[in-house]
Image (cartoon, rainbow, N blue to C red; front, side, top):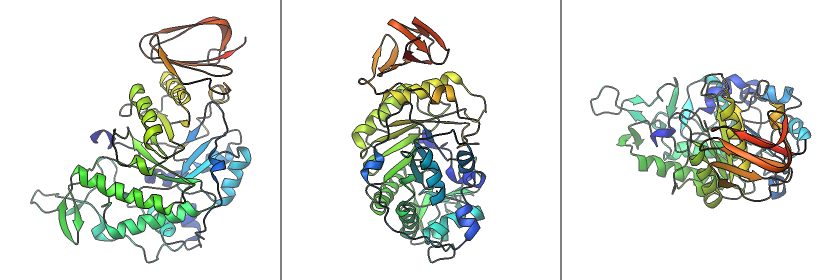
Length: 412
């Protein structure tokens, strides 16, 4: 689980993306926790290639960018009028809200948002964060757990004991309110199965050691209870970071998960990512959602081969989505990330499952072919004229370089 510890953190970006307006603008506004009337029909995503996701969406950019159309939008909270605007552009867009279940950010605005939702509109309500909810560490090596456990590299982000009863009550209330809002089609839980970067937890005020199994069991119990609180017809997905390992207990409670930093410095590679997505078809609840989330490793420089490979990977399987942004420093942008030449392609319905042949992954569609060159350059020969959508060239023979992907449509 060490590999998951660099999962980007949704709370740090809430402050930058305008997601706190609900909590900050009106403070104690009423939230009416009525069950939404969504049916399974809304989950039958319109067939389109590719299917696009927006992770930690900057809602102001999304709402202002009229040509940007996403199939899955994940953010902290969506207001009813915002949902209406988004769905007027694309009625099939799924809108998910949420935070995490194992950490808090020591920021007044973030805390107010979290507590306002959990208390049904009143940040000063009965449900509050208490000292014994925090995971602890031994700061001076004297054998006593004496300091809140802060994640290295993320100032002010503290881990919570997922098995603490009052913490569970707080989290469950948050997700119950979130899930029952009619504008939300489901919820997102960040940092599921993240590395347990603390040394202990508190039980009745007595420090207890924390090991990997305790960390996993506590999260599994809490996810189970969250699933009970969120209406059954709504989605529950998680940010799994690199991946969920085979046999993970979490998948039974989820409809799917997001693979952050896919193909990146610490994320899943191509083979691991595809294997993970295929496991999701067997281990999660229908409709088995997987998001291949590619970023720039926080460099701000787009690796176009990585971009194209991630996009193509998301098209090899059904119920999978593609997301792209800078990375942990700047998730959820729309203004600089809407690439018409890629996102407006229409390959039609898939004609079958993908296959691996001659060093590449390939899937055929009604109107074209997607190809990833994995082991060496791959030469693709067609019997009739095809057009390379990226190079804007037509012909019957194309070469895709190793580590890159090609998108081809019938016709010149």
